[in-house]
Image (tube, rainbow, N blue to C red; front, side):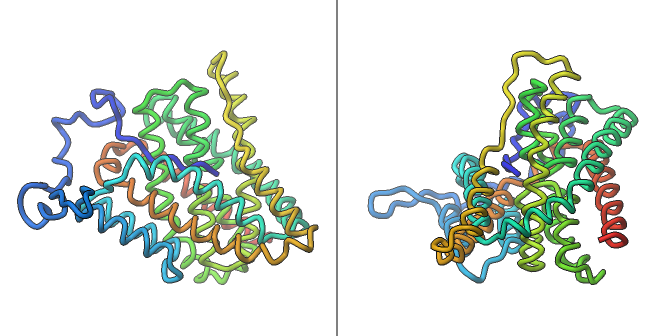
Length: 356
């Protein structure tokens, strides 16, 4: 919830958490001075402004994401293609914009939801939420020790898997006083698995003939980040989107007690705990849509803008997942992330299919 933060490249390459540069294969950076890619990076001047074709390509992809032909999976795929080829020429700007854009998009989705239905969805998901959060944190501790990973990395990946991906990691990291490379490893692991989930979950849902309610609940529990939860649910249907968003945002509020518990367990004093205030904006929008008849015409407009905002957010996230970022994580954190993800996704899927 969601505040998806782009995984930063580790700043301490000699850390045991990341492969030493001398042992890494050469990063898939294209040579900017030779071959066809030279033209993409060569500065040009138009109307007194410098620009490169690389920037033009990014802008064209961005504009496409604003159109009705773009969808969250397509936007993420475009971002990934960009990241693996010519790179993101506006890394700093997109990193800053992603969190705010997701927050405004989630609030906008609230104008399309009914408070009564949301309360019902929240009641249905509370037991799944509590069991899955604490079960994931405990399993992460056990598996992390078995893999020999540092306790900070284990806790960050576990919190990201259990609660809400990048947002949880961004909130828990400062409480742990985690190092930059530890944050990078956790964020890289979670964001790669998020990308996989966005593409994989809708086909699985259709193959199993899951209802809208079942699929929305499954997304909220088994997909890490709010952006990918909403993207996958939106691809499945409006009711799935409503259930998934409501349950996921309720789940995200667990950042606060988990952060407090983290500070106590790791004996950290004087730390600041981040509260996801935008969730209350989502609740306010939902209440307005439900109980203020005069605001009804505003709903479809806000929801449409929110979906466009979400699509652009996923494009920005994909553009930040370069091969260098993916490779910097190492094998063991991915093993931990995948094991936790498989357990929580298959376990929740089995329970949902047999009880909901």
